Image (cartoon, rainbow, N blue to C red; front, side, top):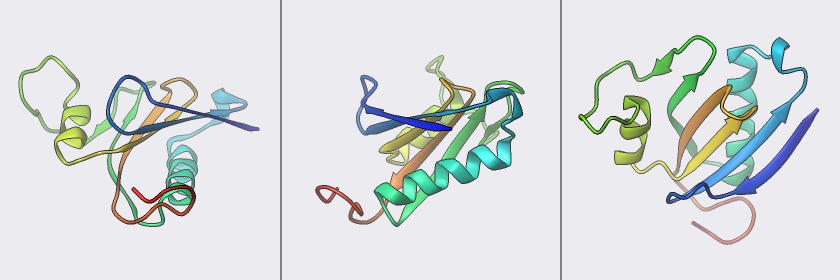
Length: 109
């Protein structure tokens, strides 16, 4: 089951939170596909910039990005204009997107 909560988490852009049950059976590829689908519901031309898997610590990109003390994958996405974050299961998986075109619902971005 997927529950969707919309909101902004103190930063610029839009945050969409998905709840997927059972969380223990959710793998990275399935989470990534769910995030892409949700992002493309909001903006048909959403481009994935970065992601993080909290269980393994894996993230993309795997580079160092500044010395701000913030995760490099977050800094990387933000400096490239990330304006949509899809958070699955309260941070189990996080995906940051750039909305490139008009939104498919609501007001154009």
